[in-house]
Image (cartoon, rainbow, N blue to C red; front, side):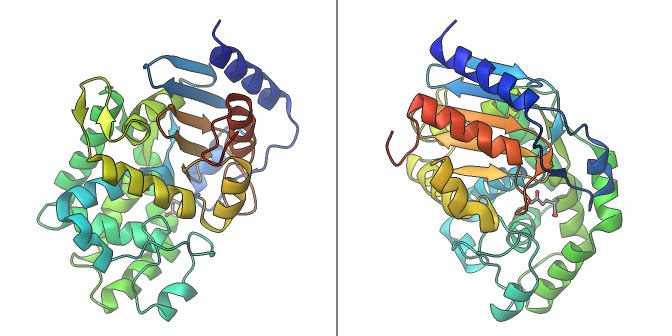
Amino acid sequence: MSDIARIVSEIAEEMRQRPDRGDVATYIPQLARVDPNAFGIAVVDAAGNVAAAGDCEVPFSIQSISKVFTLTLALGKVGEGLWTRVGREPSGSPFNSVVQLEYEHGIPRNPFINAGAIAVTDVILSGHQPREALGEILRFMQFLSDDRSIYIDEAVAKSEKATGFRNIALANYMKSFGVLENPVDFTLGVYFHHCAIAMSCRQLAMAGRFLAMHGFNPTTGCPVVPDGRARRINAIMLTCGHYDGSGEFAYRVGLPGKSGVGGGILAVAPGKASIAVWSPGLDATGNSHLGRIALERLTKAMGWSIFGA
Ligand code: DON
């Protein structure tokens, strides 16, 4: 067994046994049904070797992790012009904050808070029907993971649509400033559905490889994005990927990472590996409690923190 495979299975075993598991999100009722004892981890290294353990093959709701991929698509569509629609500074606020949007005249602080991700989704939607935009996002995930079985969990999308009052408020507020081009219902429909994409840790780690490998998809050898763009997406993941928990994540883990309220985290060790972890219980900032601890263990053991061993 390689070092990394041993470390990954030791981490999974420790996480399986820990009593402190955080609290599963309940504001999207369908997410409250997930087993809080689940734990999965998958690491794809630069040579393409996969080390995975625990519930690494179980699909879970990727939620806000989808925002990394919608940001990538929107930058591909409109380039740097995207930054007139959304900022790229950390917010220091919860992911669904309303008050900050008012201060900043409807321009969201960054593409990972909910308001910012809704604005990014609107950019992808322009010129398309919602069904086409959603198909583009899903196919992008399938292409990056090299796995056509990735799907949208309709029950999760429906559950969020029925209870998404904050997001509806954020979207309407942005619309009043002309920040959204499309009908609010259409933009939110695409947003709720891309948050409801279900993927396993293995699939997610595969999808993140281009960010770890200078923009290249190692399977095909083709660039997904230019090197400089991968670097910049990683920078935004580091500074904004865990909302008001981003500082703590950088301090403890030391990698660009993006969390979701489904309990997943995608983390990128540039030049070394793409990593996905999943544990549904969240901490007070809405980020996976054991997911963060597992990544802290892994980066320490492998010397992967971007700030030094
Ligand atoms: O819009 C929402 O509230 C969810 N679809 C996504 C939020 C999320 O994942 C925040 N991340 N930790």
